Length: 416
Image (cartoon, rainbow, N blue to C red):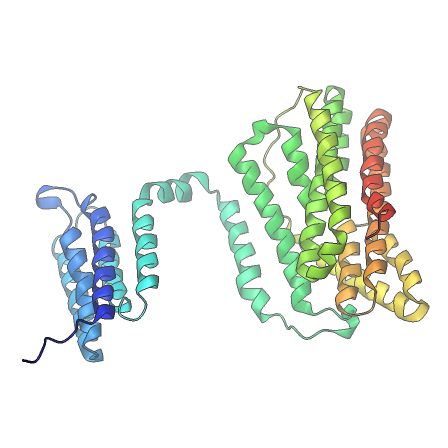
């Protein structure tokens, strides 16, 4: 007696995944379809059947049958929509039903992907209220514009930028340069979101930290101007200025990781010492002062001209440092990096790290160049602190900056 054919376990798995996807999405729609004559046309059973129909037609290996089944589903949904159009013109349920059918089709070849996609679809449908409130009430037009600009810079422009290194950029490729500009925009946007979520009442400390991701030097100057207007905020302003130096260490770590992962390991002790000292000083300063003042949200999630200027400054300083190193040797390149550090520590440091990847500077020389850039940048911060906030603000702020700078240099005393 001939035995029965063994069941196709892969097909049964696909059917089970399709059924689970249909039930998951269908249960969410069932809860929204309402009751009575005005209820929506598709519920849990309809969605489960649509998913199974997709799997069964696909398993028959007849492409025309899948097309016919899909067209039938679209025709039924369209007929129902036009025949019983309600005051709600949305077609979410109709689209969800067709997506469920496609998930059933895909379950034959990719059951794991189908299961994950079904969860995503159900979550999107469930989050209708939260997404609507976020889109219409919480998200401002300016924030939407900033999000589109950032997405365009990262997803549209970045893939189109050439990868080939350019000699007049000091041996770095344009895509890496643009990626750093996008990275800085993303860091600023992340800080803005944190400020937006936590609220402006968190005070100057949060503003100093967020502002540090844009420009620690500019943040210290802005805090000094505020302290000059309101002397009672002296301690809070100084502590917040030190907070901005935490962002400097974080940004330098991200820049090092983006340019050359090996250089991050070399800089890690110096950056940890810098960020840790800044964090300790900020915590002590904020703990001893309770007069934090609320701050207003910045007008933009990130500063696009500033990010592009950073990329331009990076290109210029990289070219200058590369030319100095080639003409006068590596020791002379240190002077070029230090000079660039007066304007921006990140751009100067990125120039030195880029030259490691290009083979122009040795790793120890590049680390020394980064420390010189930090030193030059700290001096410029001190000068701006005195100029913007007066003698008391400048003195206290400079004392902390000097300790942070000392901590940055200290790991050189214990070489590996």
